[in-house]
Image (cartoon, rainbow, N blue to C red; front, side):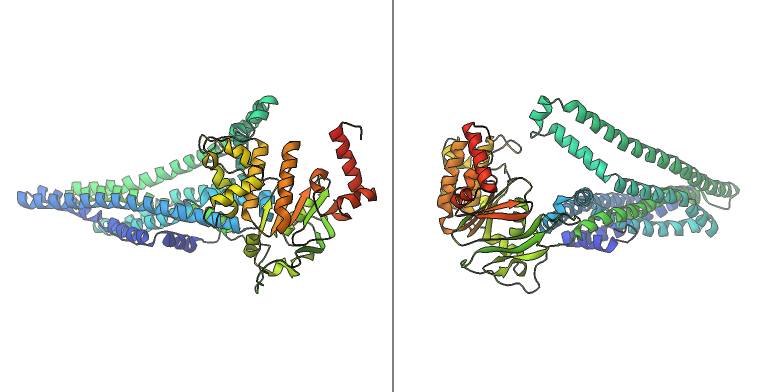
Length: 594
């Protein structure tokens, strides 16, 4: 990330794409705002001089009327600018949020498995909704203030020598320098403290979320975590306040310099008016012009500083939007095969996670034929879930190949592959919507098919508890968004299984589908799974032998390698790792010593 790089043009493009008509309207209004305040400023001079020279009352009233009309027009323009600014901000916030969502979905799973990504995402989510709009707002302020200052400078030169006008402008420099320096220091602080800010958010989630509420009370963790949160927040607050104090002192000194210069010039013109070398109107116009010039100069410096600050933080937004995929689609993708003829196969697949040296999968070879249910069993950490990620093509293997009907998955589009498979993950999602939507989400690109939804629920052995809910398939679930029904862990699992069944894909990858279920529910679900798998290929990832028994073929993994394969009876007869797992789990069920 290079914060020194200018991101003005990309930011303006974002604003233009989000609402082009609003941007045109803003430019027009800003240009009018720059011209309109000069009119009453000059008219006041004419009014004062006319009164001093005892001009005709009608002439004075005409001048006053024009000055009032110009002032009212300026106020109307200010209201219009405020509306356009707010409308632009809303459009832009939605547009950039859509970009962040699209980028988040585009990125590979690898990004979600390291803290650096979440630092970048956190910064982008904080800055993206308003920083591009702030850039455009700063540009508008700069345009309006620059045009207005040119006009005010012309008025001041009318009554002051050019070097006095230059001195007034130079007196504003210390304030600009102080603001730019603070923006740079604030940017550095935010970059260094992103991890701490995310830690505070995490602690707040722990302390206030439903998921952790029970453990916090049982284990008495609340005081410990609350104290950690307080320490983190105090450290962040101390840094912010120290920076704010330094800024306050620097700006106070700058204001003193600026004010001294202004009143020095006013004193000169006041003396000129006393000695008759300047008119009373000149003095009044000067006072108003200087006052307006101070305000406009402050706006100009604020706009320049805002532009500089937003440019620094926009670097974080465009850094996130510039992240690229590491699992690339082929430049000449192959079409997905139609009906599966040979099925899924892993050929000598080896893999280690990025930035690590540990081989998680070591020359793994296995296959799942059409209509075959294959189980992959092994201890925790054996590499089963990693293998599942490669089959889903969240990662590509370091060596070897994952193929479908002999076609390397790296040669087909990821989206095409994902549309052809279904999966149940260990950390499956619980959607706080209706029962019907929870199942329909398995094939949300199509209109809901109520009969198919109910059939999937029956196959997943979820229909029984759904029928007992007060609104059946329309029952809202969870309590995060509304007063919905809270399901048990096993019920959520069966609902996730129904979502998987509803997708009706030719290939299914299921990771620990029976974990968390009681024995009766497990047996019932496995029976439904066996029936559902008759006309599709299923890879069942599990460490439970009870689930593996229903498989046509079983692969046993240990330390990233396939060490045994065969059906249940064959593996038990071999007396190897699988047989030991089977007898250990059987003895646990029967209460016998292992």
